[in-house]
Image 1: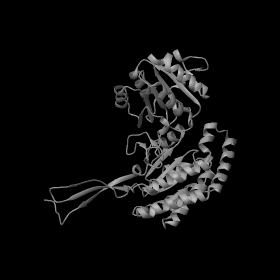
Image 2: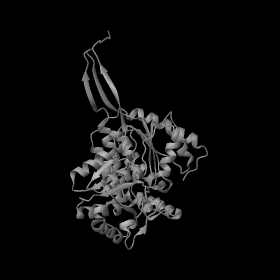
Image 3: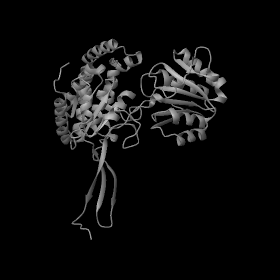
Image 4: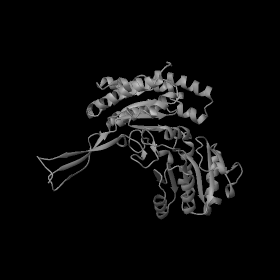
Length: 420
């Protein structure tokens, strides 16, 4: 890792080059962007051994730092996950180009024709932790949407991110697009993050992807606009009309498939009418799967840990879940409003009125009915990839794909038209 004596100067240079690249990308053809992404996908696969070797250095670094097993899982790359990156790059490549899309069009009595069309945001700064595949996802989505990007990966994924970014640059070169369109901050120095957050002359928006500490830092200190991606305090409410088998399948998948991702279930709310039956069965299944269950009241069965006040509103990101009985659906909604993070919440029920009430009364970015919360992912939404799940309400919300990385402008056409 190279040392930089003057981080502000180094970051300003990255910003200038990104700004220049964004001007070229803004009108790059859909064909050239497609070609760049396909070439990048080919390069990632061709260099998978080098990427996995670089990832091994990061895993060693993570072990030395004492990362939890869940965080180590987020960090780890194997051939299957490299294949996932390749698939994501190809999927983004094959999507319709959002730039220039006519969102709406109308004619005025004055003779003017007005179109509102998608346009790139410009330069996007992406700050993320651990998961090195974000390098590929963010690079691909920014390129597809005509934006230059400055990537600042977590210190744990430093080597992996560098190896992946090198493959993205190969794609840019192959399509004769500016290499500076996808840049990676070349230092672990945290001063680089502070600089990126205040580079209003060069950066148009910041996308943080990580835990509460990272996102809180970004929101406190950024002078550049931020797409907020807060904690995934994900709830599943098991209604009195829930199907037992569907509930078992969904809850186990939502908690255990990958415990360290933001869509993993963290809190289970169970209608009091089914606590002694389905509720206890679900808790038993979680315990049998090795999940530590923090519960109280009627759910205080053999093997569970007594829940405390700190368990509500907590993102465990590990093989741990909180659970509690609730009086009814409105009590579940009240709990989620108080302790949720507006990320993803799910209801298990066969009652369409209950599902409709849950969807109507909650305002999370993603609401699910009878489906695993692990589907809270841009790839699973058909976006190919995502930069993150935006939990704010301004501009982008939910999975942030290529279309969400655009703004719009108005194109107004006349024929010598003058205003009276």
